[in-house]
Every structure is written in structure tokens, then in C-alpha cells.
Length: 220
Image (tube, rainbow, N blue to C red; front, side):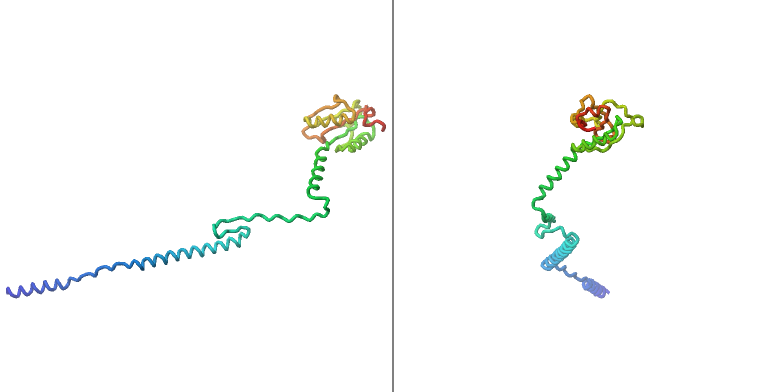
């Protein structure tokens, strides 16, 4: 019995030793191939980015032809607008400078023209139109002629001619006094009134003394 037990114990130990298997040692990764894979991934990313940049560049140049994108810096540069070719001058004497000076002179004469309204307060027929012709010859802009109205009715009992400054400013007062001097009126016959909606800058009301004015002398 003792001998059999020994044999059994030896066989059990042998079975245990044969069942234990050794695990293979892990292989070390190859660093060279890992580096190659890293370079391939980087190259693929760069290639995708470059092709996308080229595509966007071509699309921008097609849609915005006025923009020029430099290849070196990548900045957008707007080209300077081309200067239009000068128009041919038909008359060599009329250069752009002479045309501009003529326009300035016309504008100055238009600005200096004072608007005048002439009203007949004496009843003499045609006297307002006669004064309008004389003032137009002096470069005044006569915008209205008619009868002087009082309470909505013609009134012809004005004794002395008077002039009304409708703007009541320093400049309009000077113009009014200048015209009064040309007509032969005194400064006492000039009045100022701030009219919010005047028909003209100056209103002249002709009175019974019109024939004594120097502007009417020699003509009835």
C-alpha cells in the first residue's frame, strides 16, 4: 500500500508540471515602421489641406475677379481702379478748366440775382411792368408784378413809394438799400419784415410819387 501511494503522488506532480505552460514574451514594437506610419499620416493631412486651399483659391478668383490673391503672402490685394481715358476735346479752346470757370461764373450770377416783386399802388396802368423791364436790365429777377391789395382788394391810394425787405437779414438789408439807391429812394422808405414764406426777397410798392423817381425820369 505504501508503495502505491508514492507512485500516485509522483504521477500527480508530473501532471501538474506538464499542465503549466510558459507565456511567450511580448514583442517589442518596431520603431522604424511606427515613424514611417507617422510621416505618412502627416503627409496625407498636408496634401488634403493644400488641395483644399487650391480649390478655394480658384473659386474665389472666379467669383471675385477684382481681387488678386498673392501666392507668396496669401493676402488679398485690391488692384487700383483704372483711370478713365480723357474725353477728346472737340474745340481746343474749350478745355475742362475754361468750362468749369464758365459754370462758376454762371452760378455766381444766378446766386447774386435778387428776386423782386413789384406792386402797383398808384393806379397808373402799366407802371409795374415798366419798372420790371428797367430792373431786369439791371440783372434783377422780377418774379411777380400786379396790383397792391389791401384787405383782399386793389388799393391805389399809396402816396409814397416804399420798399420792403422780406427776409430781414443783414445781407438782404444791404441789397435792399442798394436797389433803393438805384431807384432814388431814401433809407426811410425802406422797411424790413420777417416773412416766413415770401414770394420774393424784396417787394416794391409804387406810390403816386413814382414820376419823381430818377429811374422813371424821361418816360411817362
